[in-house]
Length: 212
Image (cartoon, rainbow, N blue to C red; front, side, top):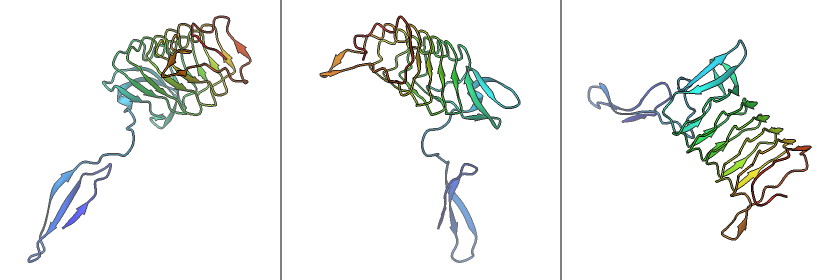
């Protein structure tokens, strides 16, 4: 017997050959299962495109874990538009590819069950109220992020840790009412550390308990 491995284009199967007549038949068909995370298909999104780039404008899929594709129709996805995911109560995790340089205002506001956001090198701007009133817990920003907009993480009361990397601008109220920042859990103090790269900090930074 010969086992044929599945591929993205075809099922796998077991090939049997008769030792007497040489006839063959196949059975035990198996589907291809890709390794690692599966990128959410373009059909789950609404989007606009130009000759050179794509902007995600909305989400119509049923997935709870969303991995935004780096390309659609052979063009890079460069932006998540205003209110693209606003108010979505199903998604729990989103991964933003490095092709995206801007997450526009309100993009994930009021995503009540969003506990994880994974960013990649290439992101530059997180805009006004982008993740306001979500359930993020730990956030690591890539070194390319330069600006965090007004109220970007306001009312994320679950946010305990955030790595600001090389951020230059933290706008007013960016972490307002992030009350878990600075809390003490399991004898570990949670603190928001402002990096030396910051050149501008808004007048109302946060309602958290610790800032260094």
